Image (cartoon, rainbow, N blue to C red):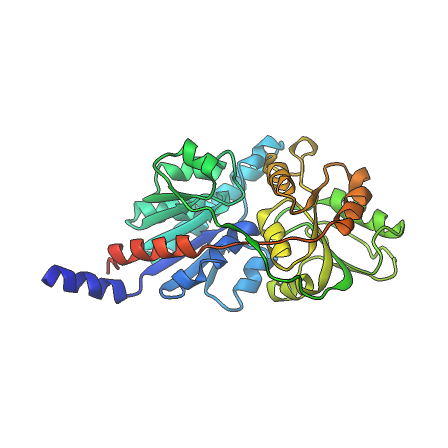
Length: 348
């Protein structure tokens, strides 16, 4: 009886919780689990991006430097090592300062040291392999799997790779009516990496008359002069709340192949053209964006385009098709996380 009472008391006490996710889709997956972490004494660890800074306006946030193993693949090993060293020092200071009981992380590399150091200090480590990984685990996942307290995967293919992981597939089609839209195209390169090829292709298509109506272009970390095209607004970064308003109104979204951008556009009922970054053009650390875009295209949810010369055809095809709404529903995963957190209880 005493043990049962103690367990119930522990279940009601908030845990010190670290929510570790890099920018973009990784962080949006953590945000989708708000029903779980809002019940605890939480803080975020993420990269210094527009999304991270926007998040800091409403939540406790620690920002760490971006680095990724793929930087070495693209010929910048010293840049990677320098970023990793600074990230390690930042992560160590964060763990010492906050002393989390639990880390929940969707990756990627920029938050690995935070998760690892917290685990070594006695925290539980919940590894949620990114929804972006349908067929093969990420580099972060391969490193995290060996030290995580529990691992969740979000595709049946990864469950075959990691039989001891727990499977929760969040993808759901929506049967809700498409909301009213404006003659607006929103093009975005995402929060982390520059993508000049997408930017130039979108502007060229607008000049050629292939994107009627208004165009809002988020161009990221690159230099871009005012193109001088009517009805075009260029913005380096867009705060998260402003982004939601754009998606509410946009008829068409042209974006990189990250799951965060794709799912939020589909959820908002936008016509979507996915323009994934390519490893062979040194635009990303691997080709997982092409895998994501093709998987969504195979489900009939969007048009995927690999060659910038084909962007106009993809836009025309997206306009001709009936838009489909889809989302990720994390209810089942959230319920499982609550069970785990209640069983662990606070260590202080």
